[in-house]
Image (cartoon, rainbow, N blue to C red; front, top):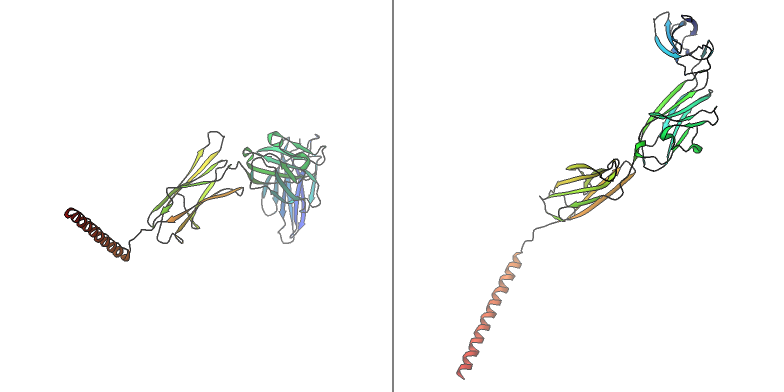
Length: 348
């Protein structure tokens, strides 16, 4: 096996080259190829020399040298087809992007997309991963789609293609990092990968509930209560508002549901002291807001009333005194009349 091969080329100032190296030992299998791009910055022209040194049957080490700098870059590539080298201007696979929903409800169908621009090159394969590969699209194969594992079993193959993957009946266990890998065809096999995260939520089955100690409060009192949201995965996020102003929770608890795995009931407390300007027209609106991403957004509220002290008026006091005195006089007259009647009867 030869110890190395040498190649040099020249480029003018400002030009940009992408170098691809291919080598083979007569076997039919192909693997991805590495590439190296170098801007030509010298005043008139520059000569770059590429040295290939063999480390194993399947791996090459590409060392890049120039007249001005030694060992600009080390890069590892894989062995490919017949012994040759190819050069091209910068073109091919660009603008790879992924579109995965931030959050979806358990049991729903999810549309995920992977977009890219091949320019004049040809697509070799599109692969999707969540940890392990679960979807592969190779247009030259028949059929072009292949799926793998438990997640692959959820792929709707008749609606999936080179740009879209459709998953049915997703569950919280399907939450995680999704990656899309796009590869050009021979001879470059340039490959780019992008990723994004998706959460699958099991939503609470029911509305939040608010409980407070009493319905009437006076200035200086403390409103104590709690808000409870049915169990879900993940647990709901709870916030409070009092007359439209946000108030911090006094505590937050997530209690494990004994009957449903990985589900938690959310409870948040309220401990709010009433100031002189808290009431609005003698009323206090307390609202518990519960949400799970954008999928579950509900609220519960109570309307509390102001408790004011009852003070007797001066007029009311005088009237009460006058009425009391008159009643006593009537009682005295009644008793005097009764005694007089009895005396008259005895005299007769």
